[in-house]
Length: 119
Image (tube, rainbow, N blue to C red; front, side, top):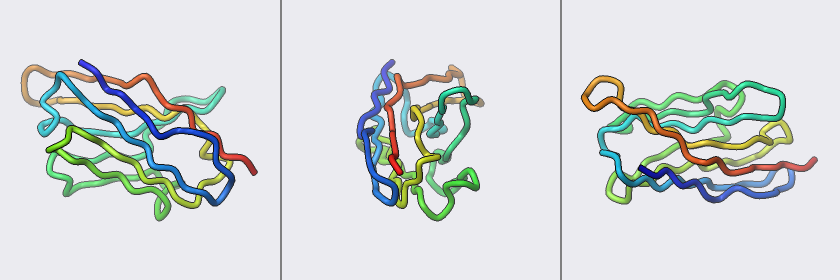
């Protein structure tokens, strides 16, 4: 099983980045997907989640209207478009895939990608 994130980097405040996560070894189209982030000294938090069909999407309040999560089941890819970035968005961003009802259940994480927003 592999979840491989890419797209992180250094950007100025107000800029944009697009994160991608390519999955292999899981039933991607039956997985609940999410982006999490962890800033230094803080707990990991859920940034955005998307259900299997893509019909239910949730965002943490701090990114609403700026970030967009999407999934492409044909390409086993999860994306996060981040616009109007702020210094407080600086963190390591992780992709997560889980299956909580059907067997086998699983909960997998990517290795993380660093996003740094300068003021």
